[in-house]
Amino acid sequence: MRVVIQRVRRASVEIDEKQTAAIGAGLLVLVGIEDLDTDEDINWLSPKIVQLRIFNDAAGVMNCSLLETGGDLLLVSQFTLHASTKKGNRPSYIRASKPPVAVPLYEKLIARLEADLGKPISTGVFGADMQVSLINDGPVTILIDTKNKE
Image 1 (cartoon, rainbow, N blue to C red):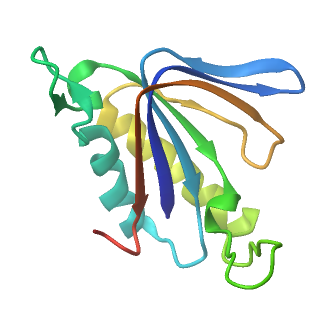
Image 2: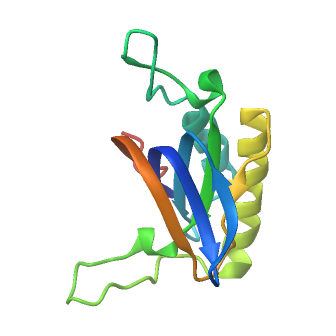
């Protein structure tokens, strides 16, 4: 699984010019799922996301997590995170899972994030043509790949 985590002041998703999800301060998480992903990836990734200390404490130091701040989380599926640009100029998305594999993992990730955060999260609609808006806070953007835990 690959995720792009963005600390936001607010974020939202629109589908067909209708807002389907919105959050205030917290995290916008874009997730790409590949066939090699398993429950093990989810079990490692979810606590990492909610405990990542990228929010400011009283001294202005990034020392607090989403869990500590009580912020919101918006999860959006994004198969293009697995784009391969090695050859030519047209990206290949061969590594991105098809819906029969990806949707169950996406739903498990939602459930695990909600359990770890202790409240419901907002989501995009898997496979939909979405317009995602955000006000990036900082900006703070973190990339995590469960196959390359650095």
